[in-house]
Length: 210
Length: 90
Image (cartoon, rainbow over all chains, first blue to last red; front, side):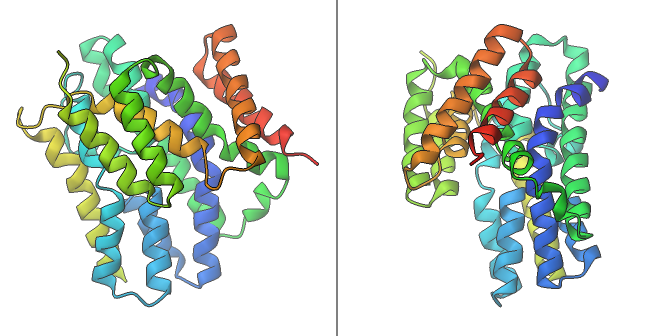
């Protein structure tokens, strides 16, 4: 697990400013601290958390807000099957399965001994989870000033794209991955990021290796 | 509000857990590489196209070179992120 925790720091670096912003949003919206922290503790899926809070603040009925938040997370359904050849998914593993944890695990797990994989994955997830929740708490408690220095705030926010690039490099000659990526990017530029990612997963899922 | 929170939490967990747990019914094909490339593209390039794309591209190049030179993923991410911050200074 220690190896996974150590490997999680690029994710933690990228999560932190987003989580601080999320916490600060809750403080501004006047939502109770406990409720807000609970969203990070129980959901652990950034985009859908932002959507949930935004929709509720606009007066959208709770059931509809939760459903829309879930639609944003549909892509997560592809992550487990993609990792299944390397790791059996239990409840704890599934809880930690965010975009970034998935991408990093997909790269690292095939190179690890079978008996080390679960510990590594849980360390990875735990590192990401701690960063997300610590950032949420600090943001909600008024520490948004932590990111006021422009270089720091912007630099940290770019950690995740940089991480994704390095994880994507081995796949950039894979025509299926490029097609899926192109579709996702097109949808993203049209403001439909979640659907684009879902379609990308679907394209990859349907395309069997010869 | 609390009900919405619990529903989202439960639904998200099930979306992650059930397909992973399902025994062989859902073969992943090339979903992994496809999603990783897609996640990279959507995280790096925000609409609309702007000078920010050049800044992002330069910072990504820095991260790539960092990975090539050091072989350390964490350091390369740190280098790319730092470069992105510095390029934003006016």
